[in-house]
Length: 419
Ligand code: PMP
Image (cartoon, rainbow, N blue to C red; front, side, top):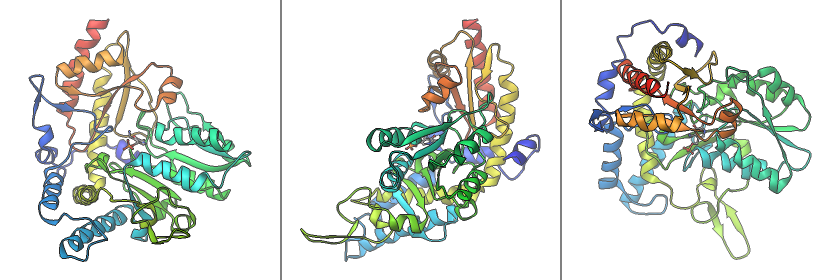
């Protein structure tokens, strides 16, 4: 990411943001009488027309339940679902499609790891290590295991600018009771990009498995799970321009084979009697019940959209808009960035003197600008930075410098009201 941030002034001809925007019907609307400026992509991304069309076509022509039918339509639906899994495999550069489990979202992926991998292996005297910038989805499962299983939770501190204190993290990692690491690749509250490859390397030197929360990374950074060598990686479909209701857990095959199922019922068994159950093979062991079939197909379409645009070009465009936004936000009187890590992407978290983040959010909405206000599901992080919440504007592949101009104009008016 540092390369992309180092060259924000380079004008690119091959990423036509207006042509990209034209593919998003959700962006072509007015809100409160103004053209919508959508700066909440970190919470959920708008959907390109081709994803919407794919969902509609699948439901209209190819829909049936998968894996069960002997009839043509069910076979077609199964093939489309399998193809989506293969698309996910390519997206992550996983060696095998069966290491990619479809789940509901990133939250479910991380709960699955907590329950099926960590809960049975760790107990009193063992600790899970996370960072001080985790989303609640990588905090609360460990608090529950602490209560139920007596494991400890260690939290690596951040520097004042919201970067991970890697030395402090490593010191905690070196403690003999540290048995598992969960770390976000990109913080949804601060935008900090963590050195996940180095973290995995250091953890593996000590035999400690690592789960990477890629919910804010998959839409901005090319992922190669083999190169990263992480044990688990989670992301959500709705943040990568796909449908809500579907996400992915990648896991190393050896771990997934050894783990008990997360949920039980239909599809995740090979045979059942009242005396004995034989679990299904991967990935089905972890996909109990009828999944979000169309959601997976739509996610495959979204990944194709993203990879055809080129994730490096997307990242370069977003870094340009980010650099412009940082420059322009500095013009707003009383505005303070929360999190200024040298490696960051997409997320701009800030406060304005005298104004509560929720009031700012409401006033910006009146100008047709959608941002997020509050803790961003990272309450301990925001509180540790000394704030009762922040305003968060987040950049996606369709964000323009014009969007940032509208944000800055509105913020100047808001700042004047509270000055
Ligand atoms: N981790 C991070 C870093 C996130 O930003 C989010 C979503 N805000 C999640 C996990 C949880 O994702 P979901 O709500 O899709 O389960």
